[in-house]
Amino acid sequence: MIKKLILIFFVSFLFGCSVSSQSQSNNSSINTADRHIWIPADENELEQRRILQARFDEIEKDIESLFLRLDVLGSDEINMRGGIKKITPDIESMDLTVSGMIKQEESRINNLGQQLDHVRRNNKIFDSGIERLNQTIKPDPVFSSRDYVDAFVSFRKGQYAKSANLFGKALQSNPPYELTDNLLFGLGMSQYRLGNISKVSKPLSRLISEYPDSEKWYMSHLVLALTHYKKREKSQALHVLQKGLKKNPPHFIRSMFMNLNKLIHK
Image (cartoon, rainbow, N blue to C red; front, side, top):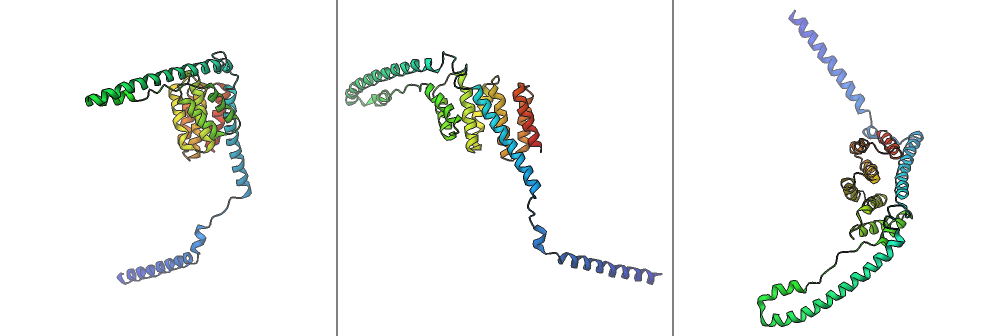
């Protein structure tokens, strides 16, 4: 009985070795390079990719067109103080007034400087105070309607580098609250068009935080979703879209949300 068991075990062992050897022989016959061959996409797959990209391009153009349509140069927002033509003379007049005030202040500072030079020679204790008084008084920057208009004109022409610069410049010049969301979105969209993906989020996030009732609030979510998608952050893109949809956007914007959502899901 024991001999039979030993014989069965020995035969099984030989059979297992034979199978293993054959398997290794078959595997070794496969060229290692062939295991990692890149198979290019066929024409049908390439066509599907082209169609998908064309749809993304269409959504980007729709967002841009909507932005320009909502903020066309003759819109109520720009005309809120009687129109750019009416605003411009007032601002130019203000510029002249401020310039006159600056010149008067500079003259006053020069006179003070002469008096302080005399004090400095007689008493060094006042040196620190004199240095502070010698500093030039810089007025706050004044918003320029011309820069605002030029930014939109440049954006419309596809001159995104110029529009980004002008939108940014206008944002630093104490713009009216009613126009700031336009400037923020214009800056973010210009950076997006330039491919500066890392610079898109900051102005649009500020817009979302400060202008919850603006149409640009919804549009900012669309652009941020596109930005995440370009960075291959699909889940973040879908999250941003869902956040925008929860606020029940207007019908003409909601359709853009739905279309983009479908494209990202593909």
